[in-house]
Image 1 (cartoon, rainbow, N blue to C red):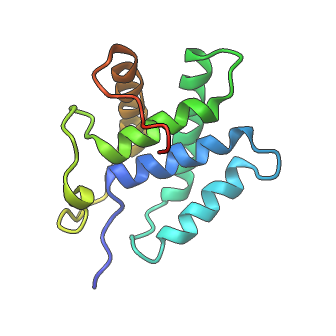
Image 2 (cartoon, rainbow, N blue to C red):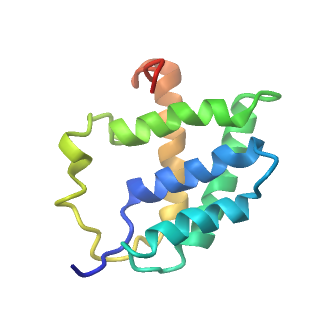
Length: 139
């Protein structure tokens, strides 16, 4: 099986997952981004996604810190992870296996950091307005 480029939703999940570690005392964002990147290098063409993941994670942290000043960022990001896994940014629910088996990213995404930032804002705003449901308690 030939490698493809990392799809936007996988990149978004990695960036948001990295950002959730901002509250952890035993790992830096750089270390977390490296761990996620190492896990995905076997599946995707490494086109510098580790540094982009780190940049996107920092953007995401900034968004959440502004939205919830003085609150732990990690708790708000669990909701964003739920949205990334369950919905497309346009509001449509993802289907069986989220289409990842059949949707291969054949070209690099040149603006994936900016797109991730936009998607997180869409999911955050959509959650606040009720467009996206709150994650189930045991999610």
